[in-house]
Image 1 (cartoon, rainbow, N blue to C red):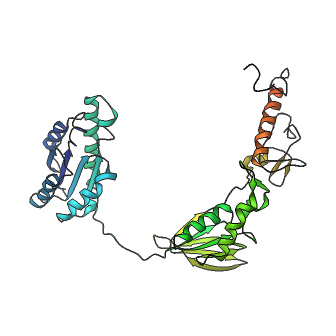
Image 2: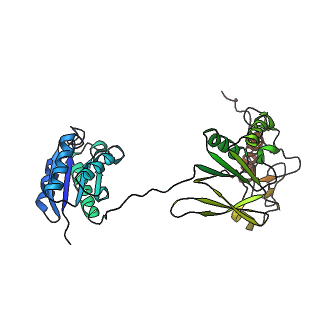
Image 3: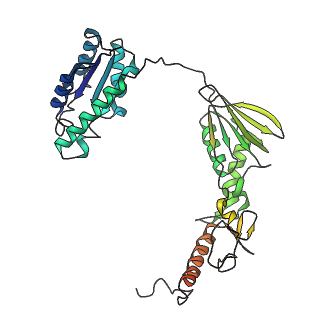
Length: 334
């Protein structure tokens, strides 16, 4: 079945026409015929006269598809969808091409810009012929969210949502909320008391009327027909559901050694055992940061930075035995 396509190309003042030969493209596409019934160009297609041009052609020429080439769809696709709808055409039978940001604004070669713009318009013509009319639909949603994880990130997220007036459910797999931050003494870089930051949030979360906390539980399923409607939660083997239209995964950091578990490194739980020089049990393999474990380790970000420097200096000696572990002061020679 043949289609009846209308093609409309905008000059956008000189924004497009200054670098793309709009008239030439319009004439060549119109002369090619085929399913293209009409091909026009206009100085400002988004203006009321430009839109009227499109509406009149849809009615008078019985167009069933429209291609419009101009600026960014983010700016004017809603404009032209409304335009074709006003003429009785399904808005999804419309296709828009960006020949301003994608052609005229990114080159100073008029010939190449014109060639590319024409190719984009021809591609849109080929595509729009496969469009089918769609009908929008509405479904009721529950203005509620679910946050997975009761650490500092999850608590902060839940409070922001709850303060906006929406219901929030926090699902935490541990027995208490607080996450890793509850295990720290100080936080980098200000070395503020971790509890001084965390405790006010846990207190507010606990008493906020819009927040429900479920501990020792995990999210085991999402339920919905096209859109999220409910979240399945398993707690002590019992499955329950909560209504939610959004899920935020605030899971924090989990150490995962991945393929390194197969290297033969000495491991302690999920950490690589090292000595004071950051050497592992393999002479030429060193490690630093959260991944490492050694007697007296203090898990602070600042300590990780120091470990990295230690590992690098000791690695230099492995690579070049004539090098020194201590390379000197950074201010030397200045």
